[in-house]
Length: 217
Image (cartoon, rainbow, N blue to C red; front, top):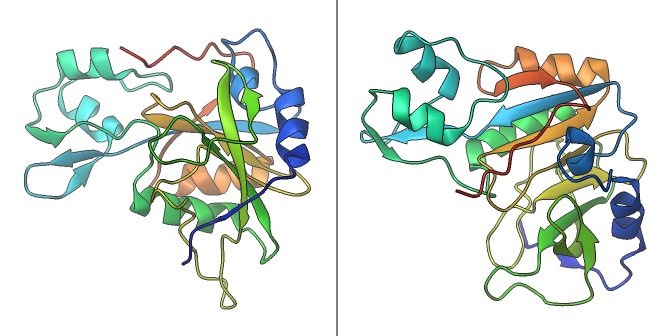
């Protein structure tokens, strides 16, 4: 698909930013409060043969109990899997994005997207500050499905998947930080159950009051 369209009118992004909890260390600092459900989805790990493996499967293989707030340092220290590349930070892989779009079941209307202005060659203005780490975000618009309702990969001109996506009615919203190896979705209970039931998504239910650890190490 063509790159997302840059928007100068940033009021839709301001509306989201104003809903975020300014305390800066809770799920509701990343995704606004008020959703029925919140889900954390972990970016997969790439193995040397080119395949991927989930954090959950890797942790279970090594005799540990997986949990919703697994972090890469503790995971890396305890696992014995010969991985090739660490999970992406701030840029979920295409496979995850496609399955997530299918689970969210977006319509064909225009959606909003926000991406960090600090990425190389990213558009620099106008911007809106998003908590929890006061990132300056640029607003884009585009679609998530085509005329056949097939998933469309949302990317900016830099080729990156934006950090935030949401429909105009905010019935769901997903977001994460530039250093995050996972993303968080706020949505209805029905949508959350679809995400959690998808075997291709390494997902866990979390609470709005849960603390989100800074993944910048």
